Length: 133
Image 1 (cartoon, one colour):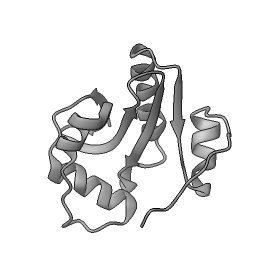
Image 2 (cartoon, rainbow, N blue to C red):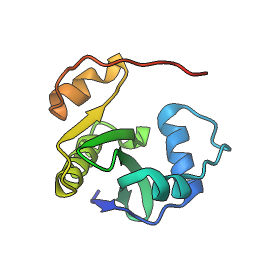
Image 3 (cartoon, rainbow, N blue to C red):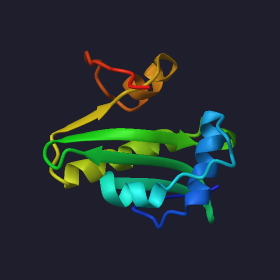
Image 4 (cartoon, helix red, strand yellow):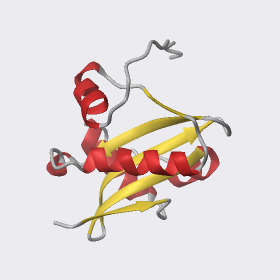
């Protein structure tokens, strides 16, 4: 299996929504307007492809200055455990550095601590979260 990481690939909303549904146990019929959102809000996004199949994704939003935010890291469950997620994050880090950002933030659920702290080398910090819905 040869995986290709592609920054700012042309997004197919159905394909990316299906990946997210598989990765997060979501509704596969719920198609989101990914391409519109990414063009409007993202510094970059990266897809992991096995041939023409999208098997991984990450996006980076930013404040237009020194802070960037890692979002929506997803790898198809059939392809997890092979370093694809870590490779996506590392590619995102390189893109963020090239854009001149000083900080890359990420929020994650407790079961992903090993991935983000050990494999991707993020540091633990204090942060706040407010649920709006």
